[in-house]
Image (cartoon, rainbow, N blue to C red; front, side, top):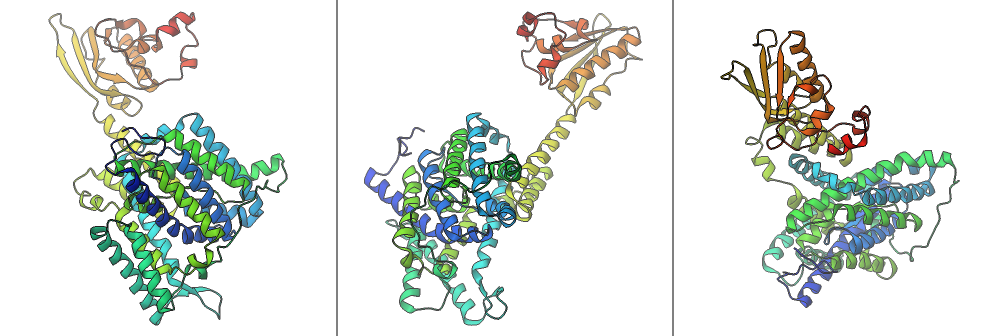
Length: 532
């Protein structure tokens, strides 16, 4: 589906004025929800609230304009904040700014090298675990809004009595309005309608519930250009490098998975490598303007998509509204009750969680169900990057194990009295044991044929297994013929190389995964390397 420079699809069903109105209102809704999130994540990272708000503005603006997926929202996130807190506590906020700059450089490098395409290696069960885990994390993050500081101890404690009752009632009212407005109100996004109605009730009713201003004062000026005040030495580099690598990885994984999710919901395509560059550029700039860095936000992206935001307009408008709040409307925004924003996020949780995954648990393979539960749990307990990496590794091991079990052979004696083995299934490191167990060199006839037409050699372990099998037949004084091996295998085999029967018409033309520089080291000239 083609899109114009604003990200509006060519086949958009809305007229341009209606589309712009929808995008602006969606952006306003996102901006209102961004304020407490950015402040909360700044507190997690132990930095000033404006550091989080500036990051939300700069990252949100740059990724909205240049990102790989129109309609996706980026800003300061909890996944990054939990990584930052150790650096800030140990070395101070200036080292954080430097780490964010280096994080941006690494992400830009990832994008230029087009490494974003590897996100396609994330299996669907890992994606389901990701969205379920993120939904739970978003839900748990809202629990802090139900706590107040105890004046006696200075610690945060749960609300009690009428305050808690009123808070829960307003959250429920917000969710009810979103549900009803989503069905019957079309001229304004349902979350925005809920925020406005509940805010008016609280403000004019002077209800004693926590408001945005109770978290922090959000008034501020335009962010200033600021070179991190740190020693520019190798020692400093070694301090910030581990944090920058982790931040870059977490940021890109969350951003690319969110990109895939938004693309799936909007039935469109996103540019993974383009998104990597945009995320990197936004963090590079943010580090020089006193921001804590950020990445894609699944919760805010869902709010935007559910509100009708599909283009670059919504994300750009959300960032500009956020800046306007900081500069001109802080007093008004600080009056918004937290209950309204919590209700919006609870609806995001309900919309984000893959409820269908609960229904299919007993219908899908047990290994896939295990991966979904594992990734969900690790996302909640640890962080997103670890969860996705664990999920991919477990899925890969399960796939390798299942593929190894599919190695088989059909045996027959041909008219000449030779025994033929017709192989089926992939030959690679995991299936080598199964491969070796298919043959009986001691009891086989004098002439043996192995046909690889129904098989495929995937890696160097497979090649080594073929060579070892050839040596076993040689030791028994028997003749072995290998048919239908790819040209790569012919060049890379050692002991079995002269046993291959070449059929130019029928033999496959696939490559085998090996270290070519090492494999071709002993070839006579470059012409042989060119053949493979």
